[in-house]
Amino acid sequence: MYTLKLASPKFHSTKSVSNILPPINLSKNRLYLLEISTRNLSTQIDPKVNTIPLQRDSINFQPNFKEIEAKWSERWGKSSRLTANDIRNKHNALKNSHSLNEQNNDKHFYALSMFPYPSGNLHMGHVRVYTISDSISRYHHLTGKNVIHPMGWDAFGLPAENAAIDNNTKPSTWTHENIKTMKTQLKNIMIDIDWEKEFATCEPNFYKWTQYIFLQLYKRGLIYQKEAVVNWDPVDKTVLANEQVDKNGCSWRSGAVVEKKRLKQWFIKITAFSEELLNDLETLDKWPEHVKQMQRNWIGKSEGAEFDFYLNNPSNSENKLQKISVFTTRPDTIFGVSYIAISSEHPLVQQGSVKIPIYIADYVLADYGNGAVMGVPAHDQ
Image (tube, rainbow, N blue to C red; front, side, top):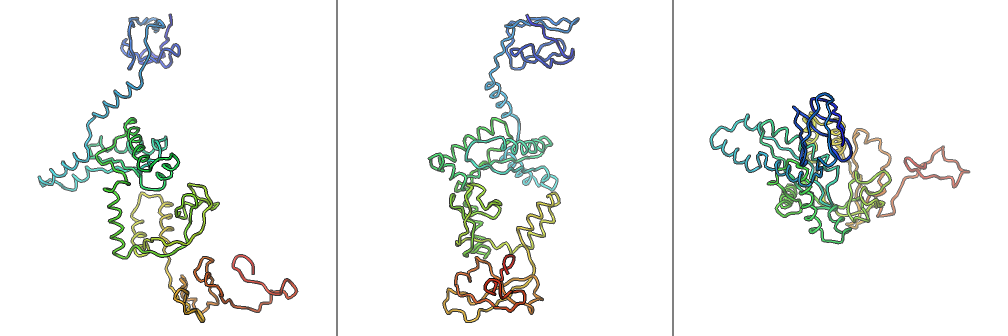
């Protein structure tokens, strides 16, 4: 026989008799064992010593956690919540009754988390992210708001393709199997998601809209093609943004040494609306200042003027440059210009036979080397 010492006569014990016996809740002389079979349990509490005598086999402690999880998942699944269709019907009813006003609109809340890559199973990082949005969604739901908390799958890109290659399967098969698994995992941890609004970015009914937006920008001259030097990942065989190249010049994903490569690329003419982007940053009162500064740096606005310098005796070939365009933030210094420095990646470098000026300088020693030095900014002189 075992004797269970109660930590408090009011509520529950904080420790069990052995590894076999669980903590026991005690309230008003009644014994509650949550989700545990209590066959043959008929002991009485001794009020003098505040103990409960227990036989080793008096409690059949064999909880089936899968059954417990299934039970409460079903209970939570039946809890009342408004889906997107419910909200839309309610919204239309208000419109038809002419009672839709600003106060009604304040009753709507849209919670959106970053969509996961379905290139594997969910991990604890996903649990953290979606627990946060789940808490926000449930809070606003409990305050009486009509909440939409959708889920999507960022499935149209390099991570899914690389994972499919590593697992020797088709990207479509790999992606949809992972989506099915991830969806089950999210349901198991009971994240409050409106599954009526589920979508995957690899489905035509989604990416047709990204194609539509691209065409609209192209028609308005905001998207164009040109050759440019890009960061090329030789392993993933894709172009990388500067932010995806680490301090050692390696790809953030594959770890390969990034190569500089000239390719024809699509560009978005952000400079055409950089002023609007910068001005709107000032309206984001709740954004951290360092994040807004990062956005300003990416936009990269500079005020100045552009000058064209025509080359001396340029080639008649249409493929050769006839002039060099230079941007400066100090157009007032144009009359003091003495030379033009070009990047090692400038197209003019490929033409060869570039003429450079020769200067007589007192700091060059006749008996040192060949009595001549080359001027390279930030290096030799």
